[in-house]
Image (cartoon, rainbow, N blue to C red; front, top):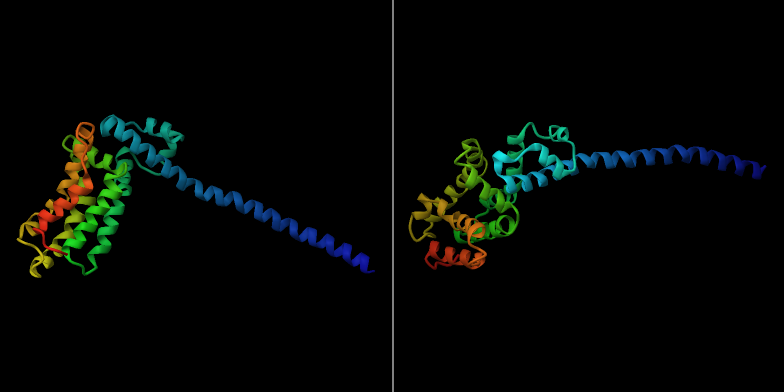
Length: 229
């Protein structure tokens, strides 16, 4: 009798485990499929960066972006309405590290010099030191011919950065941290050397390499006239 029960239990256990195994096997492909759209989207953005950088905004074609990404052209339209939407999302993804760092610093009561040093070091590390610098170079070169691109970049990046910096600099001036009101009136001065560095890298770096880290330190000294943080 015991032997019969064991066989029955074994049989029932096998029947019970089989559906569970089938469910597990079915769940795994679903997990892979759910991750695939994110991977395809990332591949499209990477390909878009390569294509826009190589050809410029006007000459870049979605057909070529699709080829670089290894997807059908129609797949791009599952994620982005058109070339402009693709470019805009590429810009957002490229500048998010700097904007994220600056947004966090906005609510931290630290000296203006320490904040600006952190902002510039983040820019050097996350933008200048990566392919993100190519997006800014593209904005500088294509913006005059395509005002919609310049307007978008100002609204999504420049305007947001200035809106965060201005009240911080006003508080710093009120506390006597700034040698004069130049930064309050022209916060653009903070990131000016970064634009110079990006243009220099594209035009002159092979003739006269620029030490960007040293330039940032010199820039901060100039802005604060040697005042400590």
